[in-house]
Length: 230
Image (tube, rainbow, N blue to C red):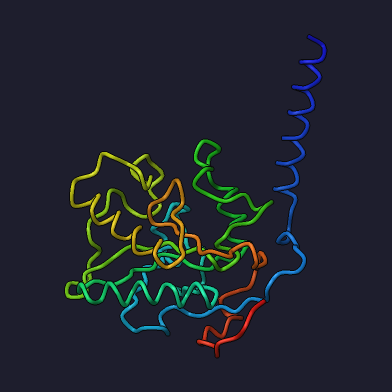
């Protein structure tokens, strides 16, 4: 009994220090031997890639503006893979609608702090950083090129319910078909869907990039020349 009590005490102590570290942390975690940021502004790849950056408005789960600019970036390989998906969709008179791409670490910390504990599976812990912080995660959906409207999906973006799951079975036939089409096309280009969010995709090799806290205003966002990486 004493041994069990001691184990519980150690676990509680560990959790306490983990949470204390998270809230006391004022800078992004540093990781050695990572690639330098090579972020590309997505709308410069193709003018028909559309943005719906809700974090630059107040109609988001935080309830206020958290991005100073409505812009979206990804690391070069991820951006080029995304462009391939967009080109395939254009043949179907469809296109990509981007909700979010690279996210400064400071914003991830804010999201964690304002999110209720029972909903934190939908946000990243700033103590370990987010794949958005690495410029290798994108939140997106599909829109109709003719109408400019989003096609029907099982849930809205940033809807913290079971409908957000990429495996949710309760949607209509059309919603499920659209969601699964997006997933299939993204996975074909090296992306993996998040287990809790059908709209969130992580690009392969994300772990080779650092956790960045670069302001949008400090990113040139131009498509750079192709570089060779080890």
